[in-house]
Image (cartoon, rainbow, N blue to C red):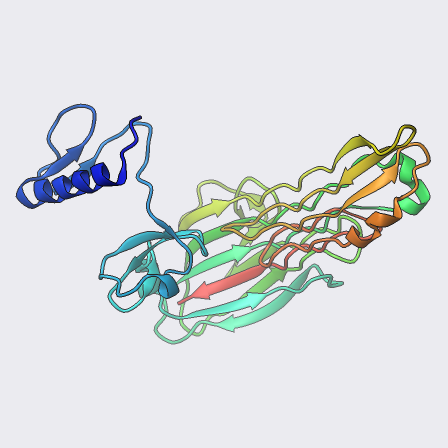
Length: 320
């Protein structure tokens, strides 16, 4: 690939604008003209079109033109400017379902789910539902009593995500159960999230292969737009380091929690050092024993020593 200097690049851009003003433009290897309906066509069988990656476009892009498209680094979604504000691509759903109400789970609850009831407003016959199951806590290890047996301290798994259309009737009462974020004990599981519509229950779980319909893993499901399995928690890692002629350190990096869709990060675990011979914790590392909780909704908590990171609570959003 040839790299152009700034002057050459400017000439190329000017030529491209001149060509585009007079004729259609095709960027390809086949030498064929662009489609008759396209002013500019980019062809490839193994490469994509990389949009500008912009953090917080509402703050960083001045005087955007209606129709301007970019990738929003902050939300990890492609956005376009609709003339008055930035909107995620696929914004026709937002226009179709302009109102929304959210139901959130809690962390470290005794009950696996928090239960809500919601009555379908007048005039509504279909809703768009987004659901996240709660993330699990990471594993914990009691290094004070068993440091020499320290082997695996994985992070917790993340909750699954599903987006779907559901047919409802006005004044219908829906039962909404939102999964907890696991916490309070080693590897405490996150809770499943589900919505009961009439006699049908739609449910997301943790690190599964699909959406559950009436407690059965079902495929296909009418109205299902998207399903994304939660990420798995990473295993712990360890290595050895020589700190003196006779002393070796065993360095433990506790497992990171799994990530949840679309970009909720799992908790990051501590990194600690032990004397490889005696198994004693090296005091200088005491400050880094803190664990990381998974982001809400749905991310997994980190592994830890003595304590583990909590998973992110589940979430259900009803758009109507």
